[in-house]
Length: 126
Image (tube, rainbow, N blue to C red; front, side):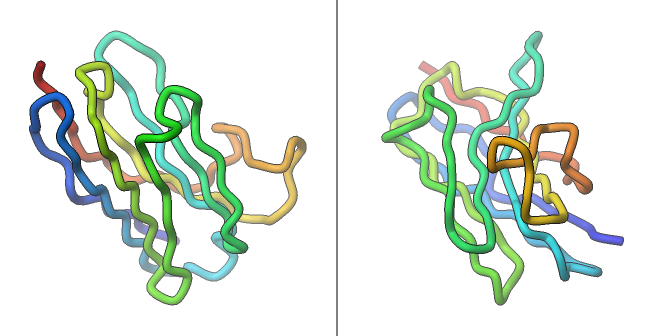
């Protein structure tokens, strides 16, 4: 079993920054992909950023140039640096981890993720 615990959420004004962290514990071998998802009020959960053990990563278009995902494989952590935050970034942010290296399209789909954290709330005021 794997446990994912997020931290770093909070409330900031538009243009501010936050850094989210996710720590994995338990049987962490094989957690090839780790990612961040978010669910805004009244919206579906969406993928924000994903990173593999080899460092390759993707970010959703709306956060490119503002968010950066990084990972420490030795510590089993994944961070999301969020800069120039906007009110539309307000959401519950979830950390997720997927087993396995190979997926159609190169990255796991949301349904492929095996483990999820409970989330950390990010609120951006204008």
